[in-house]
Length: 511
Image (cartoon, rainbow, N blue to C red; front, side, top):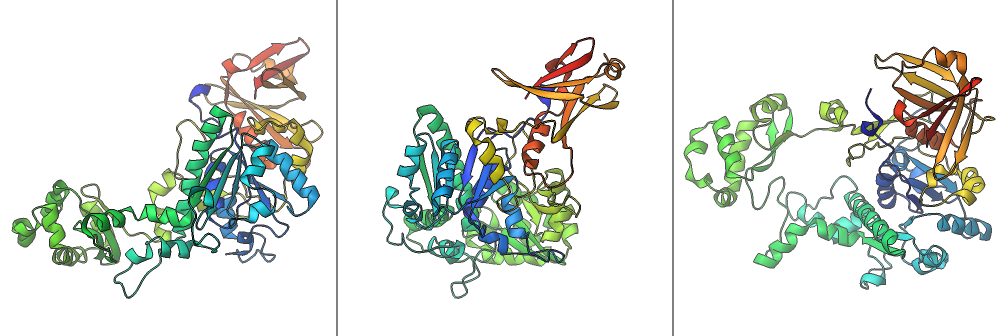
């Protein structure tokens, strides 16, 4: 059994509370990245809910259309409170949440939050340490006034205006949008970086911070190559199809049963590739001897590469090229599901359905990994599911330690204590009772039967505490309890206090 210091701990962002007013893709993607790694993300929804709840796709047996794949993918690990921010009572409750939170995120059009009385200036008066994150099509006036500020914008608009579509496709006459919602996803990724940087500064200075990403700006930064090409050579880059304007062979090539990608940047890889292909014209032709010569003759070279690759299947090309040169098969989603890399790196994760009975949902995992810290894949929230949780616990919660807000009680939960030995023997007992002690830290104290415990004495190396609902059914605290159970798993015996009162055994552990 590993010592506790080497076991995965709760998410690296534990202790950060985020109020998420965003909807659809860009903002929810940013907050999902944080929630996956332990931030407490509270999704503030209208009475109708995030419109992505209605966007589909839906499973055939979901006759009420409750669970959209769009919503599930982006809103796992979050909580939901349904509020009408035009209602005075709901707005007052939301302002209490602001007092107890670290971050607020919104992706409304500029002006909407101000009309609600929730602009950065107003929110920072409520919480002088708040980090206020905003995504919009063209940004606010704070960082430069845009003539398009009032224009509504979605992914395709940002792709078009930021130059991405002008670079995508086979020719100028047939522009092509990039398939995924890349303007939303890239903007959300940038905002998550901005939020974390702002949290560091806010905690250092004690002052609120406003961080903004305009989707138009984000796509310009993504198209950075086109910017310097125009500046250096006064060239307006055009679509290159599957090729590259400065490199060859670099792009997509045919196989017998699909397509593969090759990306030769360095001469060393070119020398390896031409020996694998082993045709006289590639081995001996000086036209391909340098990076610049290959770029000048890229059309002819790419044609020759294509003639060679289409003789083989993708699997055969994996065996010929895999690990030798920059290469990969063009995978469809079925092939991605089957890929061992994807399985081993947890890039498709299982999400349990609220009923807990149906098959689990599968969604794309989080690509950001932290050594020694867990990421989560908890069920997305039912609309308004967590209003009671925050209404009854908010007064005792501080934003720097929000997950300590809920303490399971005897009336609703049992505590199972599992003892594990060096030889992997496992023994389970149920606590006769348990209580919570708050001093400089919070402690769980469990009482177990003395007679049952004495048979285990000196035989175990770790202890796991696990809370279970007494009466099965919908549990509004389920994800909070799941996180608590994660924190209390595999506790090294040296980090647990055990006291024999001669009547019972008391086991105390810091939570």
